Image (cartoon, rainbow, N blue to C red; front, side):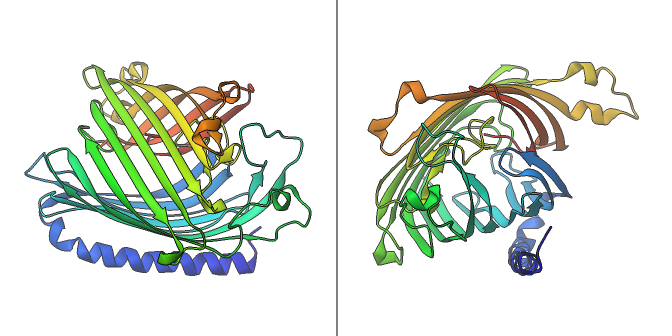
Length: 381
């Protein structure tokens, strides 16, 4: 049941994001005359091991250039949801290309209250002793990159986070871990980003390569509570097996952090985006790596049933995926025997056909033979 306190806080934050969204919508009016505009608004009915069932709403504006196929689409997305586990999240995010694509600006504004199960840190935690913790997060991310060449970008980013864990249990497993930065913590982290992108679509690529390198510094001189550095790499490759309908996607992602790492920056290997089949909080630590592959294909048995009145059946497709990964306190501490893996199968439905932006249902199984499922929006990678 939603308490009056949380309902009031949630609605105020969501109102703030709606105000911000109006600013960005206004800024996009001049650009809108040169683009085709797709608008999607629908209720969020999702599920994952981290949240259970979720109810909320999502609105998305997609600005697609009319005359130049080389220019990529701009996007504004506003989302808010509440889960049966008394979690809530609201976020405004945007992507905008400036000066005929020479600059690429992106950002997000997020508020979150996210009670979750804490198992401890590291790759050897068990289910024998756990604790519910109540993290509260306010986050702003801003970045701008410059197009050095047709596919190569480089630029700056900045991330600000206020993080606090409420109602910490005295003597509990969370307190005994003696973690850094668990209450009233500020992350203030400028960084450098380099992106190489040859994909033919940002949302559902059928071919191309994507590489993103990011290095950031969280430091007292910028107003942060702790001093640390973060390096991440994200590599993706998509192979067009047949007619842009049978697609093989590959991804490798790794994060290395050193220094006094606040708990707000700990990394997990589960969740909807990497290693589906584990909760994102199940295995967490300062460093991580993960790899996954996904085969995407049309569902011809439904397509064959499509007629003039049932043309929506052509929007269905399928996916088979598998992945593995691990966490550790440093990159030299990864152990092969604690590597986790998961696999599954999914169904997709294109809510924006041109960009193939999908609603999805994924059914998963992990190394411990635990079954779960995800209901969500857009692809994992």
